[in-house]
Length: 290
Image (cartoon, rainbow, N blue to C red; front, side, top):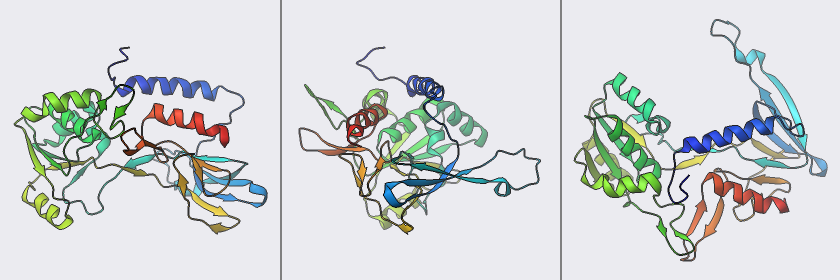
């Protein structure tokens, strides 16, 4: 593939699925499927993790799933938290919320717009996800009008000689190309700058509220719920060091989008290194000291 251009995530997803199948075939790795509800560090730095397994039952089965749940425990000398993140949705959203995953999947978005007969949508945010959501709406529908609410102007990654300015926060690839070439000229997109003041922003949303409008909130991600962490029966507050992947508790580590690496570029900008390949490089480097 062209190493100087971006590609769709489908290529990366295919590779991840292939690697996952290979991992499952490795006899040294034990795969357990379920939910970790709590992790406790016992004497001698040994961890005990409680695993709750849930069975998938036919819809016609009258027995509640909870009654068939089983609890099991796993012991380990070291534990790595990699439980991922999920989109941030306001608790009291001013506009009806459309799932970000739908907005980022053109086939699902097209089906949703047609089935719901959507004629007006809003996108909140100016990140990579927000721009992709805007592009997808424009691409899959000819008549939907869009309101783009944003606080900050679009930021683009800038390729320097040996490094990238705004490597983790700037637009790249297809999103950057579309934002430069298409976004400024589209009359179907009404651009509304937000003030940053919560009360004023509620009023701004209210001014543009229309019956049937659907809003895509692309305002960032937050950690998915982590298991309860106990040390000899006592709950503890976790503090993560984004430079080495370690927590304030021995033998507990973190990685992935829930616990990314903190990096500083040559210009002094401090960012979190978000991206699948960046997660891999971080783990490869720091895990040698775990």
